Image (cartoon, rainbow, N blue to C red; front, side, top):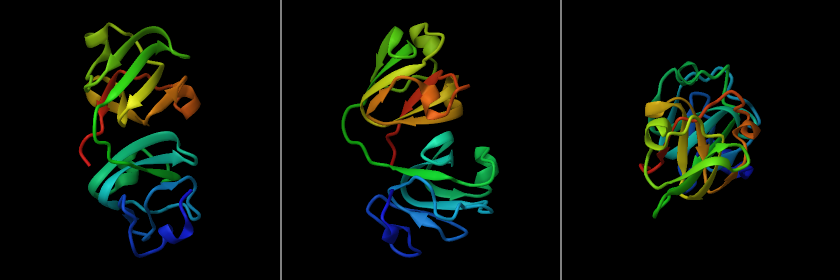
Length: 181
């Protein structure tokens, strides 16, 4: 959780800030906004990249935001009424490495990626991706081929089951490195 002073109406932390019409802003992580952004239908990312979540504690549907204007962003993201948590994505310099697994708990067929993959079925003959280990870099994983559908942000760490992230019905079929900050 970020310190209260970073949630004020003025000033930005080094990682940038997200400003809504309600003038809420933050810069690193916000697990549960003290006043949910109900009614905010647009926002602007002034710098950096963020993942916004429809549920507290980085759970539920996610949406990637980079610098720019997001008019009518809540309906565009499919969010019910407001952003419930948000995470700044730090800039990564260097290699990108991730190992994907066909089944939960790092089992089944596995493949290591260092580049974007637009379709795991075409590239690896994998029907599904249910767990992963991110060794380096920050990645977006997508529900459908060609980087479409619901998305999920993963950073270095182990993800034994995507269901634990509140995405029980999501299949992962493509993944992309977060390179443009």
